Image 1 (cartoon, rainbow, N blue to C red):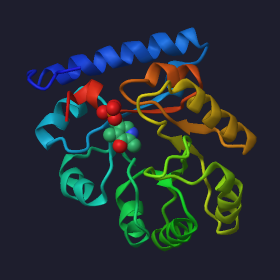
Image 2 (tube, helix red, strand yellow):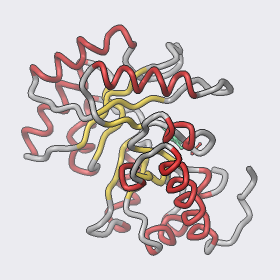
Image 3 (cartoon, protein in one colour):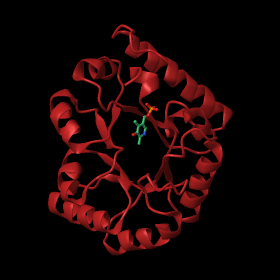
Image 4 (cartoon, rainbow, N blue to C red):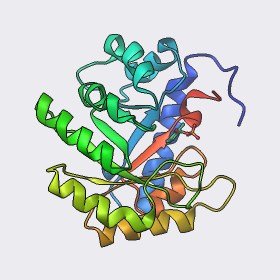
Length: 224
Ligand SMILES: *Cc1c(COP(=O)(O)O)cnc(C)c1O
Protein backbone atom coordinates (compact mmCIF):
# COMPACT_ATOMS: atom_id res chain seq x y z
CA UNK A 1 0.00 0.00 0.00
CA UNK A 2 1.58 3.30 -1.01
CA UNK A 3 -0.62 6.25 -0.12
CA UNK A 4 2.00 8.69 1.13
CA UNK A 5 1.36 11.32 -1.54
CA UNK A 6 -2.39 11.71 -1.26
CA UNK A 7 -4.13 14.96 -0.42
CA UNK A 8 -5.17 15.61 3.22
CA UNK A 9 -8.88 15.39 2.32
CA UNK A 10 -8.40 11.73 1.53
CA UNK A 11 -8.28 10.88 5.23
CA UNK A 12 -12.06 11.19 5.50
CA UNK A 13 -12.50 8.99 2.41
CA UNK A 14 -10.22 6.35 3.89
CA UNK A 15 -12.16 6.48 7.16
CA UNK A 16 -15.38 5.90 5.22
CA UNK A 17 -13.80 2.98 3.35
CA UNK A 18 -12.47 1.31 6.52
CA UNK A 19 -15.81 1.85 8.27
CA UNK A 20 -17.59 0.18 5.36
CA UNK A 21 -15.30 -2.86 5.63
CA UNK A 22 -15.92 -3.04 9.40
CA UNK A 23 -19.70 -2.96 8.91
CA UNK A 24 -19.61 -5.57 6.14
CA UNK A 25 -17.28 -7.91 8.06
CA UNK A 26 -19.21 -7.58 11.32
CA UNK A 27 -22.45 -8.49 9.55
CA UNK A 28 -20.78 -11.47 7.92
CA UNK A 29 -19.64 -12.62 11.37
CA UNK A 30 -23.11 -12.10 12.84
CA UNK A 31 -21.88 -9.27 15.05
CA UNK A 32 -23.13 -5.74 15.64
CA UNK A 33 -20.77 -3.23 13.95
CA UNK A 34 -21.15 -1.04 17.04
CA UNK A 35 -19.43 -3.80 19.06
CA UNK A 36 -16.15 -3.00 17.29
CA UNK A 37 -14.24 0.14 18.26
CA UNK A 38 -12.00 1.49 15.50
CA UNK A 39 -8.85 3.02 16.96
CA UNK A 40 -7.11 5.32 14.47
CA UNK A 41 -3.42 4.83 15.28
CA UNK A 42 -1.93 8.30 14.75
CA UNK A 43 1.63 7.69 16.03
CA UNK A 44 4.20 9.80 14.14
CA UNK A 45 1.39 11.71 12.38
CA UNK A 46 1.38 15.52 12.73
CA UNK A 47 -1.75 17.35 13.98
CA UNK A 48 -2.60 18.44 10.44
CA UNK A 49 -2.93 14.80 9.40
CA UNK A 50 -5.09 13.94 12.43
CA UNK A 51 -7.53 16.87 12.37
CA UNK A 52 -9.42 15.76 9.22
CA UNK A 53 -10.33 12.50 10.97
CA UNK A 54 -11.51 14.33 14.10
CA UNK A 55 -13.57 16.62 11.85
CA UNK A 56 -15.02 13.54 10.11
CA UNK A 57 -16.32 12.35 13.48
CA UNK A 58 -13.70 9.75 14.42
CA UNK A 59 -13.55 9.61 18.25
CA UNK A 60 -10.86 7.01 19.05
CA UNK A 61 -7.15 7.46 18.41
CA UNK A 62 -4.08 5.46 19.36
CA UNK A 63 -0.53 6.54 20.19
CA UNK A 64 2.46 4.41 21.13
CA UNK A 65 4.49 6.91 23.18
CA UNK A 66 3.41 8.89 26.24
CA UNK A 67 5.67 11.86 25.39
CA UNK A 68 4.42 12.17 21.82
CA UNK A 69 0.79 11.98 22.94
CA UNK A 70 1.38 14.58 25.67
CA UNK A 71 2.82 16.94 23.06
CA UNK A 72 0.09 16.46 20.45
CA UNK A 73 -3.24 15.70 22.08
CA UNK A 74 -4.10 18.33 24.70
CA UNK A 75 -4.52 20.86 21.86
CA UNK A 76 -6.26 18.41 19.51
CA UNK A 77 -8.74 16.49 21.61
CA UNK A 78 -12.44 17.25 21.81
CA UNK A 79 -14.90 16.08 24.49
CA UNK A 80 -15.66 13.07 22.25
CA UNK A 81 -12.03 11.98 21.87
CA UNK A 82 -10.96 8.65 23.34
CA UNK A 83 -7.20 8.23 23.49
CA UNK A 84 -5.61 4.76 23.58
CA UNK A 85 -2.01 3.92 24.50
CA UNK A 86 -1.00 1.00 22.26
CA UNK A 87 2.77 1.04 22.88
CA UNK A 88 4.88 -0.19 25.78
CA UNK A 89 4.65 1.74 29.04
CA UNK A 90 7.40 2.33 31.60
CA UNK A 91 6.20 2.06 35.19
CA UNK A 92 7.53 5.54 35.99
CA UNK A 93 5.17 6.98 33.35
CA UNK A 94 2.08 5.15 34.63
CA UNK A 95 0.63 8.20 36.35
CA UNK A 96 1.08 10.41 33.28
CA UNK A 97 -0.46 7.68 31.12
CA UNK A 98 -3.51 7.38 33.39
CA UNK A 99 -3.99 11.14 33.24
CA UNK A 100 -3.64 11.33 29.46
CA UNK A 101 -5.19 8.15 28.07
CA UNK A 102 -8.68 6.68 28.31
CA UNK A 103 -7.39 3.16 27.64
CA UNK A 104 -4.05 1.37 28.03
CA UNK A 105 -3.43 -1.71 25.86
CA UNK A 106 0.04 -2.68 27.09
CA UNK A 107 -0.25 -3.92 30.67
CA UNK A 108 2.27 -6.76 30.63
CA UNK A 109 4.10 -7.20 33.95
CA UNK A 110 3.77 -7.12 37.72
CA UNK A 111 5.61 -3.82 38.26
CA UNK A 112 3.31 -2.06 35.81
CA UNK A 113 0.20 -3.54 37.44
CA UNK A 114 1.37 -2.08 40.77
CA UNK A 115 2.17 1.31 39.24
CA UNK A 116 -1.19 1.52 37.44
CA UNK A 117 -3.13 0.51 40.55
CA UNK A 118 -1.37 3.31 42.46
CA UNK A 119 -1.91 5.82 39.65
CA UNK A 120 -5.63 5.03 39.39
CA UNK A 121 -6.03 5.36 43.16
CA UNK A 122 -4.11 8.65 43.25
CA UNK A 123 -6.00 10.22 40.35
CA UNK A 124 -9.41 8.72 41.06
CA UNK A 125 -9.57 7.67 37.41
CA UNK A 126 -10.58 4.27 36.17
CA UNK A 127 -9.17 3.47 32.72
CA UNK A 128 -10.00 0.70 30.27
CA UNK A 129 -7.11 -1.77 30.63
CA UNK A 130 -5.84 -4.58 28.42
CA UNK A 131 -3.16 -7.11 29.24
CA UNK A 132 -0.86 -7.50 26.24
CA UNK A 133 -0.05 -11.14 25.59
CA UNK A 134 3.08 -12.13 23.68
CA UNK A 135 0.93 -14.38 21.53
CA UNK A 136 3.70 -15.66 19.25
CA UNK A 137 6.25 -16.10 22.07
CA UNK A 138 8.66 -13.72 20.29
CA UNK A 139 11.77 -12.64 22.19
CA UNK A 140 11.75 -9.11 20.72
CA UNK A 141 8.08 -8.38 21.46
CA UNK A 142 6.43 -6.91 24.53
CA UNK A 143 3.63 -8.68 26.28
CA UNK A 144 3.27 -11.19 29.05
CA UNK A 145 4.04 -14.84 28.27
CA UNK A 146 0.92 -16.97 27.82
CA UNK A 147 1.95 -19.16 30.75
CA UNK A 148 2.24 -16.12 33.03
CA UNK A 149 -1.17 -14.67 32.16
CA UNK A 150 -3.20 -16.30 34.99
CA UNK A 151 -0.70 -15.11 37.63
CA UNK A 152 -0.64 -11.56 36.25
CA UNK A 153 -4.46 -11.42 36.20
CA UNK A 154 -4.57 -12.72 39.77
CA UNK A 155 -2.06 -10.08 40.82
CA UNK A 156 -4.17 -7.36 39.18
CA UNK A 157 -7.26 -8.62 41.05
CA UNK A 158 -5.36 -8.54 44.34
CA UNK A 159 -4.19 -4.99 43.60
CA UNK A 160 -7.77 -3.90 42.87
CA UNK A 161 -6.93 -3.25 39.23
CA UNK A 162 -9.80 -4.22 36.91
CA UNK A 163 -8.56 -5.71 33.64
CA UNK A 164 -11.05 -5.46 30.76
CA UNK A 165 -9.45 -7.51 28.02
CA UNK A 166 -6.45 -8.87 26.16
CA UNK A 167 -4.36 -7.24 23.45
CA UNK A 168 -2.04 -8.98 21.00
CA UNK A 169 0.22 -8.33 18.01
CA UNK A 170 0.77 -11.58 16.06
CA UNK A 171 4.17 -12.33 14.47
CA UNK A 172 4.81 -10.45 11.20
CA UNK A 173 4.69 -12.22 7.85
CA UNK A 174 2.62 -15.17 9.04
CA UNK A 175 -1.07 -15.96 8.92
CA UNK A 176 -2.56 -14.02 11.84
CA UNK A 177 -5.77 -16.02 12.23
CA UNK A 178 -4.42 -18.82 14.49
CA UNK A 179 -2.93 -16.21 16.84
CA UNK A 180 -6.17 -14.22 16.95
CA UNK A 181 -8.07 -17.44 17.67
CA UNK A 182 -5.66 -18.27 20.49
CA UNK A 183 -6.02 -14.78 22.00
CA UNK A 184 -9.81 -15.12 21.81
CA UNK A 185 -9.67 -18.44 23.64
CA UNK A 186 -7.36 -17.04 26.34
CA UNK A 187 -9.74 -14.11 26.87
CA UNK A 188 -12.72 -16.46 27.13
CA UNK A 189 -10.91 -18.85 29.49
CA UNK A 190 -10.01 -15.94 31.75
CA UNK A 191 -13.42 -14.29 31.71
CA UNK A 192 -12.31 -11.19 29.80
CA UNK A 193 -14.84 -9.59 27.43
CA UNK A 194 -12.62 -7.34 25.33
CA UNK A 195 -10.09 -8.17 22.63
CA UNK A 196 -7.73 -5.60 21.09
CA UNK A 197 -6.40 -7.19 17.92
CA UNK A 198 -6.11 -6.51 14.20
CA UNK A 199 -4.14 -3.82 12.34
CA UNK A 200 -4.34 -2.46 8.76
CA UNK A 201 -3.30 -5.73 7.15
CA UNK A 202 -5.52 -8.08 9.14
CA UNK A 203 -8.37 -6.28 10.87
CA UNK A 204 -11.06 -8.12 8.87
CA UNK A 205 -9.68 -11.45 10.10
CA UNK A 206 -9.56 -10.07 13.65
CA UNK A 207 -13.21 -9.00 13.47
CA UNK A 208 -14.20 -12.46 12.25
CA UNK A 209 -12.42 -13.92 15.28
CA UNK A 210 -13.98 -11.64 17.86
CA UNK A 211 -11.94 -8.40 18.05
CA UNK A 212 -13.76 -5.67 20.01
CA UNK A 213 -11.01 -3.08 19.36
CA UNK A 214 -9.05 -2.85 16.11
CA UNK A 215 -5.93 -0.67 15.84
CA UNK A 216 -5.60 0.77 12.34
CA UNK A 217 -2.88 3.22 11.27
CA UNK A 218 -1.65 2.89 7.70
CA UNK A 219 -5.07 2.22 6.14
CA UNK A 220 -6.31 5.54 7.55
CA UNK A 221 -3.27 7.83 7.43
CA UNK A 222 -1.15 6.36 4.65
CA UNK A 223 2.40 5.07 5.07
CA UNK A 224 4.38 6.38 8.06
C1 LIG B 1 1.51 1.03 14.75
C2 LIG B 1 0.61 0.10 15.46
C3 LIG B 1 -0.64 -0.26 14.91
C4 LIG B 1 -1.12 0.20 13.56
O1 LIG B 1 -0.45 -0.48 12.54
P1 LIG B 1 -0.86 -0.34 11.00
O2 LIG B 1 -0.27 -1.52 10.35
O3 LIG B 1 -0.27 0.95 10.52
O4 LIG B 1 -2.34 -0.34 10.92
C5 LIG B 1 -1.43 -1.11 15.67
N1 LIG B 1 -1.04 -1.59 16.87
C6 LIG B 1 0.15 -1.26 17.42
C7 LIG B 1 0.53 -1.83 18.75
C8 LIG B 1 1.01 -0.42 16.73
O5 LIG B 1 2.20 -0.12 17.28
